[in-house]
Structure formats: C-alpha cells, structure tokens
Amino acid sequence: MKQLCNGSYTLREAESLACTPDLQPPKLQDLIRDGNVLAFSYSGVQWLPKYQFVDFQVLPVIAELLKIARDAGATDRDLALWLLSPSTLLRPGPPAAHLDNAAAVVQAAHVHFQALW
Image (cartoon, rainbow, N blue to C red; front, side, top):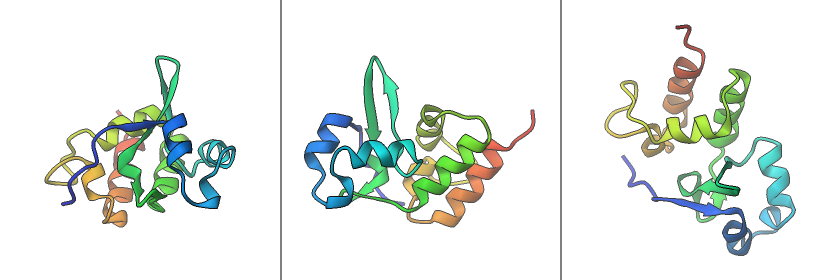
C-alpha cells in the first residue's frame, strides 16, 4: 500500500506546478472537463486531489474512474470522497491507497457506483 499524498491542490496551485506542456492552462481545465483529471468545487474553489498525481502526471486510472462514476450519475466530488473512504473491497486503507493496482480499484469502483440499493 502506498502512502497517500495528503490534501489537494487548488486549480491555481496546480496550474503553477504544472511542468509539462500537456498540463499548462487552459489545457488543465480541458482535461478536467473531459474527464481526465479529478477536480471538485468546494467553497467556490476548484480542488484537485493530490493522490491522482505522480510526479505531477495524472495516473491513467483516474480517467476510467471518472467515467465509471459519471456514468452512474455520481459527481466528481462523490468519486473524490469514495477514493478516501474505507472500502471492504480494498484493504488496508481507502481506494486511493491502491491506485497503483488499477484493476482492483476499477473493479471496486464498478461495485460501489453500480450497486443497486
């Protein structure tokens, strides 16, 4: 299990830290809109969870998780919270701690977001 990178970047922080051409503004906004970067609004600020980045590159599994959540009618904020919540399908720790095992996290996301209650 990887140690989670705590916290989130604001959109402004993420833009200033972006060190590759594909993450330069306004490209970052396009990636968020197109479902390739996880971001959510809170108190009028757009936040990007740090756990989705490795060397400021977005983990490829994020786009797949966003598609699963959005197809199920969940918000990006719902996905961000699920990634930090305890899961009986992925132990120990929350799904975000297992992003290096993309297949397991994707399977858990399908179970969670497609569950019928």
